[in-house]
Length: 222
Length: 116
Ligand SMILES: Nc1nc2c(ncn2[C@@H]2O[C@H](COP(=O)(O)OP(=O)(O)O)[C@@H](O)[C@H]2O)c(=O)[nH]1
Ligand SMILES: [Mg+2]
Ligand SMILES: [Zn+2]
Image: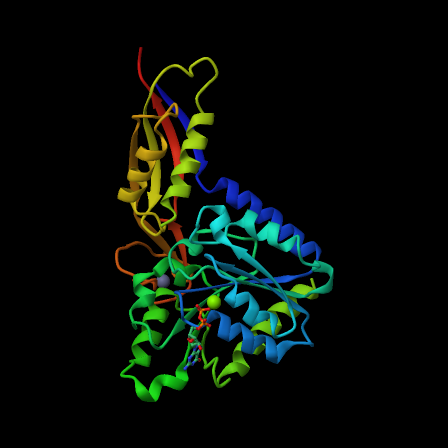
């Protein structure tokens, strides 16, 4: 005997994400979900980004890490509030789920901030599937990774609203094919902006910071 | 990589879908739709389901996965096609403004109980 069900497997997460989105909208906080492979430079990019936008944009960060607090310590030196989530406690998960972000956000004064940055767990597969209630998702890719990452992980590059191509300071030392990676990104998500920058030197940050600020301002304006 | 968590959700939803009074009838099959663009690997999902369903009403049930192709529609020229390679541009007019109609599914569609 067949019993019809028709339910989304991720219903629980989607419902929680919707609640988060409602809470963040009420608090007028722009939420950015930052994803990448381990080592692409999420933390470094965020440290540099924060140095350019604070104190103008009041910000806080949630960092998901499998078991250390190194990233949180690095980000805390910028002077913003940082909440560290060790996904270990939740079963060694490879992504941040909406309920985990909700729990972390409870430790922040959302009335005091306009921007909440979430550094997701380093992984190009799972985080792409889990909505956390964010306003924008970005993916960081670095020139020390393969040019074919966008076509190997199409879901990640489809769901994101912008991509950062990091570590361009290293280009002179590599045989990296920049055109090829840009073409691959364009094939998977033709309309997505790509910011080529170096989190080490700060090169190329202007368009990225403008993009981020305009997102925050749109959210605050309602 | 997150197939364990997904399998756990499937078991919860399927278990709570068994109608009252039928809890003792073995579940033979759980039918699932998984889009080709979703991040789930069917084989590892089946493996996780098998392990996690032990000692639940779904123990021994077969996880039947229907893989759903990626269908797209162009917002400009309305052309519809199946995406088989990671190229998300209109096959007809090359526009990058497209809609994914299917391929992201991760849905339970039904459960099948043994016929007495
Ligand atoms: N040369 C160079 N190294 C970078 C850059 N951004 C990050 N790194 C280095 O890459 C490594 C990983 O960076 P991290 O920010 O921890 O990556 P995450 O795992 O994505 O958070 C560190 O050693 C950084 O110093 C960059 O723009 N240029
Ligand atoms: Mg990091
Ligand atoms: Zn078209």
